Length: 116
Image (cartoon, rainbow, N blue to C red; front, top):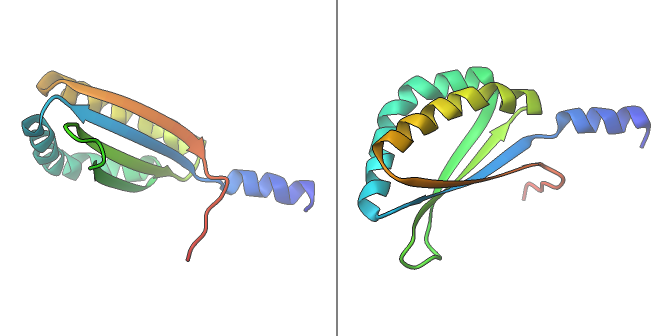
């Protein structure tokens, strides 16, 4: 593989953010979901324009007694992630004012992906 191909591959890599949000109780978790259903009408178009390509949410079920949701965010580039960050910070400030929330983010670039 030539240097030019490696540089091209590097530019094509998606940036992924996996975030775990943990709530104090199930009521807060359900309230957060209902609030997001309302807010997403405003925020998803802004995030898409800034470079968010895909967003997946899942209830984490293998931690008994925990009320956690995992989110996978796929960005078209590092620049897109940086463009989206102020929007996420705005959302986070609103969430923090409504219910206690522990957020743990993990960020990386895709180094292996297989479509089966």
